[in-house]
Length: 485
Image (cartoon, rainbow, N blue to C red):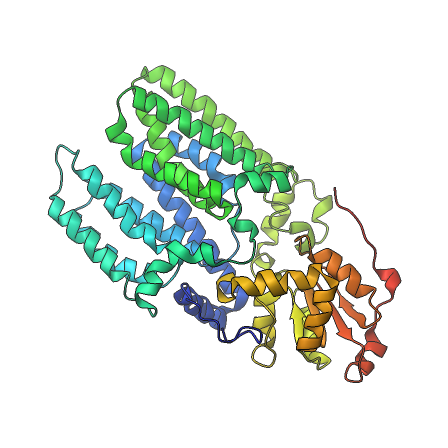
């Protein structure tokens, strides 16, 4: 853990190291603009693969309907993260495996999977779903009338599973997906359940949407089972069932459920409705398609519509005068070139820190860790960063959280580490962060010297910081306490 000065010797498995290498080289050649475009291409390719498979398993109308229904789920998590590769490879595996099942391609094509698994194992922790998918199709194969030799499926599964051990951490890297959540001492929003997040953010419609889609799938599945079609829906049923539970327990998996919802939902519906009269089936599909098209159109017109990406893309913050535009999507399209990359002025606080030759030790919050690593390492090391697996449970539970919630602990830690600077992402919504910032702003021992939309910097009143404080200290009148309902 060489980014931290608090737990530099804490051992950690960097399970997504390969993604870091890829992103680094793209950034080095094309900057953050290129990284944004690259990740957008990954998500778009993933969406198209699942859509294409849905069309193969049903028809264009079914694929379109379930694609539209899945959009809010997929777009709930579009930040640049290693898991984008997992979503893409999950789609590639699913598409190739189902294509063999449908006799669209030869089984020989599947021997590319062990090589893809080698890549996946070193890109993201969800690599375990690769062998799992193969095992699922292996089980399904025994019920097929014209089945492939079970030995071939077993060899493919074993080869793909064994490849997982080719990683810098060996067996520990293979076992990490099963134990990593047990090691977290910090409560991450992305790892919380749907019910927890609904209670915390009752106005967010995403969770209701997810629950409705679960209800739709449950209803369609029950009808399929009642009609004794369990063999034809076995794979879709198991996959959707597993990812629905996973997404319910940890909202970070909602986007994965959304991707799988497209082909699996289309297949389940197609199997159920395929026996209806052709005319009635087409009329029903047409009505639903028009409704779905209306949802997409409303999202492209309305700024506050549930299907609108207007707020998610931070467009009012990026494009001037877009708030006054009648058709925001047209203005966004004209300004497309400025959309990829970083948000405006996001680097200004780091530039302020470096231009004024500020020094640590820095006390920073969890959310801003990666930002500070990018800008300040190796000149400055951090108190903590947003890799929770890289810090002990005791560090979070007995040091990091108590020193923000308990003033006596803060004073003790301040004496121990001799903090010279507090550098916070100021929209931290944890119960302890905002009260801590309020106390520090009113603390005579500290002076706020920088604040913007994203961050706040405070310096300790000492001889080292006197000149900067005299020049940049912000008045108390600039700050106020408000409650967001």
